[in-house]
Amino acid sequence: MNIMGKEYKSCKYSMEQIIRKCEQEDASQLYNLDVINYLSAVKGEGRLCNEVVAEWILNNAQKITEIEMYTRNKSYFVAGHNGILTEKEKSNPSNRVEEILAKKMYGRHYEQIGEMIDYQIPLKDYIKSNEDRHLGKIDLLSVNEVRKKIHIIELKKYGSNETMLRCILEGLTYYQSLNKSKLKTDYVWKFRKDIKEGKREDISDYEYVVSPMVFKNSQPYIEMMEMANGHRNNLQKLMDSLGNIIEPYYLDGKDEKAVCCRFSEIWDYV
Image (cartoon, rainbow, N blue to C red; front, side, top):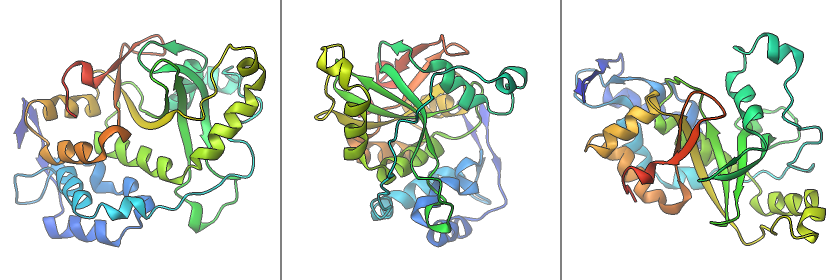
């Protein structure tokens, strides 16, 4: 199967097998399904595997809303987050590329998405159980005071081969799991001095958005370009159905110094 010059080979799963996988998976773990990240077509059919999953999610939209909110007892803002790399991270950066990138982006202001106010934001109190296994960490959190938005950022490294559907579902899972009211309260407490002095705004009335952030020419970026050119119709429909909750970005560069751009600057998919 060829889309805009990129060849997608056939995978080992049939349409029925992919749908069965979706039906059997817990809503909070959908983003971890292997077929979501398959860069291949359905066995015996001219459809992409993750397009089948996107269609299934569209037809079972209540699955996402079934993901329960989890309230972290401690502050969402971890003491000691300063963006400084450890000696281990400096000597072996290849092990945790996205975490290190997030650290390097911390404290920076990007015109389109605002200030990166924290990284690796935990969603739980480190109590391990099967019930909270989907609760990882938000890669980055930014605040845009001009547009009055709080961005839950799902960051992907330079050259990532993960799919845009995976980025969206992981971000949505964290969005649903997050106690959004408490995070705002924690923010106001953390930055209370700056807010009092007028250096920062109270974000109580800001809107949350889920923002996949990928590098230009990576796989998720290519998929967005394919969508813009009339392919990946189910990904398009899924994003349309989510409305203003989803706002994807791309980084034009190779590191934390890259220019941050909204995909909507290329085309208006909403």
